[in-house]
Length: 428
Image 1 (cartoon, rainbow, N blue to C red):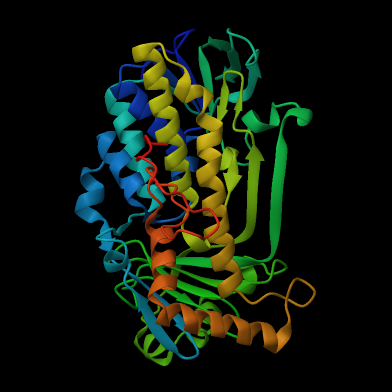
Image 2 (tube, rainbow, N blue to C red):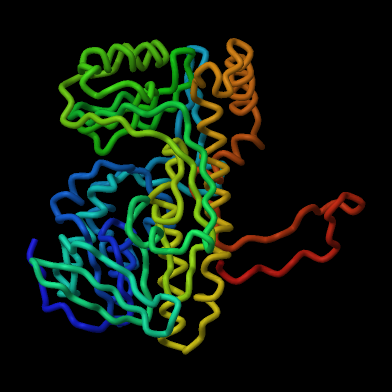
C-alpha cells in the first residue's frame, strides 16, 4: 500500500505499529486534532492477514464508535447476551446481559476491526508508512524523542513529542528499553490452541466453552456463515498433523451430544496453532515512550481479553494526550502506567482463572489426574448454580467498568469496613 500523504519530519505523536491498537489510537488523536504518524514494519496485506480474536467488550465498541468506524460493526456484528459452558455432557448458559444489568458483547472479527480502521486512516489522509524497516527509537528519555526508519531504501527521521509503542509482543519498542528499567512477568502454558476458520453456520447462537477429559474446546463464530473453532492441543503438534476430518472429529468428541449432532462441518480456509501465555511488562511508561496493547501484555485467549485490553490502554492514552494538548496538563500522562496496569492485572487474573478451569494440564504441569478433573467439574457445577459466581464471571467477561467504588464492605465490624461510602471516582 502506498503512503497516502507525504510523511512529515515532525509530528506530535509517533505511533509504532499499525495493528488495531495503533490504528485506533491514531484515529482518535486525528479526530481530536492531534498530529500523528503511524509506522508499521509489515505490509498492509500482512497485517490484514493475521487471524485474531472476535469478541468485543462495550469499551471497545464505544471507542470504535468514537473513532467514527463503528457503522459496519453495528451492521454486521453479532450482539451476544450470554455464553455457554459445557461439561459433564451438558451445556449451561451464563446470562451475561441479565447478570450485569444489560451489558452485552459484540462478535466482530479483529481482522474486520483492522480493515475498518485502515479504511478510515486512508480516507482521512493522515500519514502512515507500511514496510518501515529498521525502526529505531532515540532519546525517549528526553524532551526531544526521535524515531528513525528506512522506507523504500531511504533513511528517515521523525521528531515527536511522544512515542506510542503499539507494535506487539515482538516489536522494537519494549526491546528498546534498558533491561534494568523494566520487569517482565510471564507464565507459558504447556499447551496450545489449534484453530480453524470455516464457512459453515455456527453450531449455537452463542459461544460454547467446553471442559472435557480430552481437553478444552471452543466453538466461536465470525458471522452467521463463518465459524472459528478451537481444540486444545500439544505444543509438539504441527498444523500438518491435523487434517480437517481429524479436527472435526476431535471437536465433536469434546462437546455435548446435542452440539456434536447438529454441527455442520466443511473445509477449513485457515488453520493455525497458537501457544498460550500470560505476560506483563512493568511499568508501561518510560519518559516519552508509552507501551500499549501486546507490547505491554499478553493474556491467554480463553477470556477474550487481548484486543479489549489493548482498547482500554488506548482509551487511557488517547485521553491523556488530549488532556495534555488541550489543557497543558500532564496528570493523565503521569498516571497512565498505574491506571493501565491496574486493569491489566485484573484481566490477567480472569484469563488465568478461565484457562485453569477449562483446560486439561499435562502430567508434570499442574495436573493431578482424575482428582484435578473432578475438582474442575465441581467448580463448574458450583459456578452454574451460584448467582454470585455467575455474576462475577459475567462482570469480568463483559468488561469491568472504568469507574469503580472502592467499598470493601457495608457491614460494620468486618475487616475493611468504612462507615462512609467513598464518592464515585473519576474515570481511571
